[in-house]
Image 1 (tube, rainbow, N blue to C red):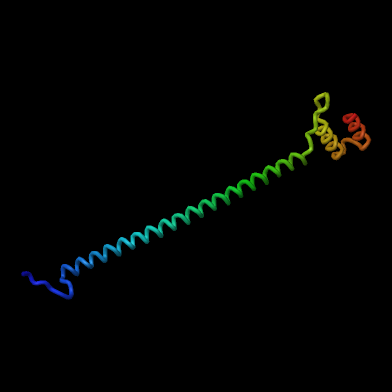
Image 2: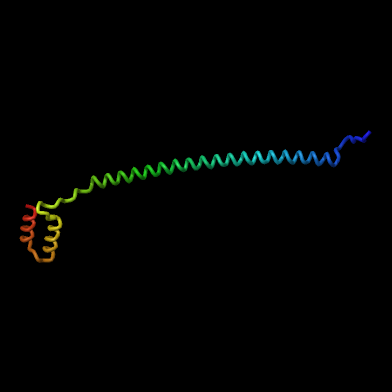
Length: 120
């Protein structure tokens, strides 16, 4: 009959027990690490989603502000002066007359007469 030892396990038994404990520890550690990675990934994705939503709100506000500025500029801008019936640009002609008056070529009376002729 083989001799059976009671008490502490032998070398092979100790190695087997160590392998089981180490394997279990590795499996648990891997599971915990995988869970932590999944949790971190979920948090990252949530932050990215919130950042996208915030950026979309900023973009929408910027587009609305630009649209309001364009509308205000269109409302505030005077309509362009239409050329007179003869195809003469009255504003340009008045500027020319003003420049001639400033240079001393036209007197005040001549300027007033030429202006009245253009406008009338």
